[in-house]
Length: 367
Image 1 (cartoon, rainbow, N blue to C red):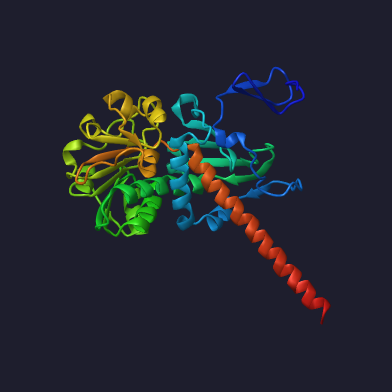
Image 2: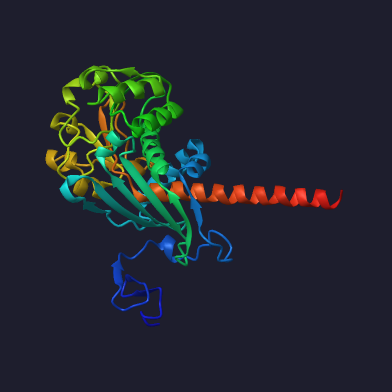
């Protein structure tokens, strides 16, 4: 089989992906055994046109109860090496206006690429600072199945990952939650964490006092005038900011607290000071944390375990009463899990609509 005539071939333990021209060849790591096996097509091979799902459709089709176990399984698969997920590509916009992330992944269930932009200045325009588009493809043929708005997927699955870690590694006792950040991720974190733990109080702080007041009203929280005020005595602290310098000090933390560090996704950016980073560190991806997280790189902290390893039982969880940090950089496999849920729900919705139309037609013919 020649490269020119092939969509993909295997050669010398490397996956050669070609678009049909010899010059368009990319070497990828040898995929896990799970991907070598024949897997069923996501839909029957009728070559139906791709679905186009806007933000409203994605919000209607993606449910948190379905997303939580799907994300849990995705994290386990990532740590077990059952997916192929290259390091994400990051491109900086001119004048430091924003970032573009390109995040591909393939599993036995889906081939997905996500394009996501981060423009902090969008807040002044009334737009989300994170905007995304996801392309879902059949992992056997590469055929595009759906193109969907990925903004809500990003917001909800990010919070779902934090909730999965919280559910696995904290006691079931009621919690006080501190949110450092008052944007969309603050709102989804309140939603997701309330789904796994009884939250008695939510405190919100960010540098924009107006956003803090609006967020507090939206989620039933308390607006704080300083990060320290929000953090003191909190059981769970989530940093979900665009900060490039630390906003959380270790001296403020309650012993035994959980810190979910979501922002600072670039090597030179920080949300946490070195005292915070001295605590036990868990990551969604060890490799990503070591090469992408400024908090990890600049503090010299070592990742004790990936959350997927702990969920699978191959690495121990932090001891009861131990303060620990969960560094989440957002993994493409999480987007793939969410996109597959949305796609399956869309197909089910179409089937139900078709059945209702058929029943209505039959009823009319028999009248």
